[in-house]
Image 1: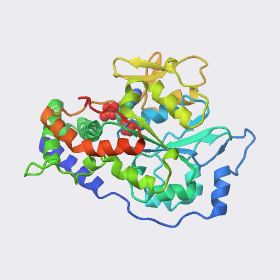
Image 2: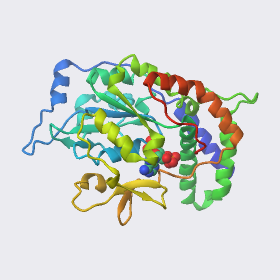
Image 3: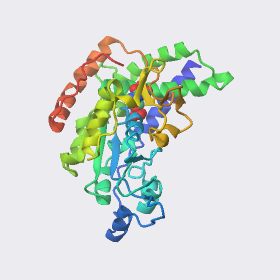
Image 4: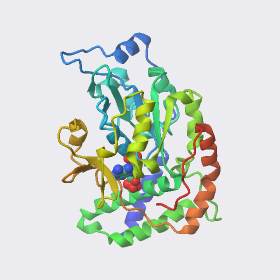
Length: 342
Ligand code: A3P
């Protein structure tokens, strides 16, 4: 059974490695763009669907869902709950801006609509397409220690496989054994036979943030990008969120009172308060977990990770160090990614 499980994980990885979209196709005409940016299907409440004024473009497994959800606490921000993947999936992009706008939530003219699609950051050609829609759009990138990102990414696959096998009597796995085997498989993926680190593995590449950022900076000025420290969003969410509110030129509304630390989950959740005006955020999706006084992200966020030995962590730390340094020099700030967290 464990072998079957390992095969499934392998198969998944070979699929996502070939999934990247490299194409670049036709852009939108000016009149279509103008109509969509201002919104033309006005209704009596003044709420209409508009193209987003801001997008969380990545990075995958860095806290994009928490960031989106928490930003919705500010009542001037309207968040799109599902990932739209308009700019990175050719079949969606072909549907045009009208289709894209239709995926948005309704908003008023003084509100900001935000969508998040984490693979925008690493997909070739997306920056040009976004600029072609709106070259003054505000872009938000949340990043975390690339080692933690990698482990989180791999652990997600493991958890999904374990979860799907749990429903099936014939493939039922011993859970601890499966996690243990997955940790071995991780090392097999990470190192070549000669012991060198496999930097061609897509999951490893995704943490070479500076490589992708350079491409975005060829299209957008730095002033239109904001970088959220994903590690700090976990520890002190309101502080990171206040900086994002500032970047979006919004009156600060999010504070420590909006969060409750949930011991069971080990993460901050949104505090449920009467008449706080958070109904749209609190409602959320059925996957999220409601506690007596808080709304937490779903069980898929903040889950178990594979255990990785110190030697492997050290090798990864050495590997990512120059990419991190270059990233910090590009963005003009330093994140503390020296921790041992997994
Ligand atoms: P893990 O589930 O591996 O711990 P994304 O939404 O981009 O997929 O990122 C998922 C990660 O967000 C989670 O990874 C978790 O560590 C992190 N995260 C940050 N704040 C969180 C919160 N308040 N609740 C749950 N997960 C949070």
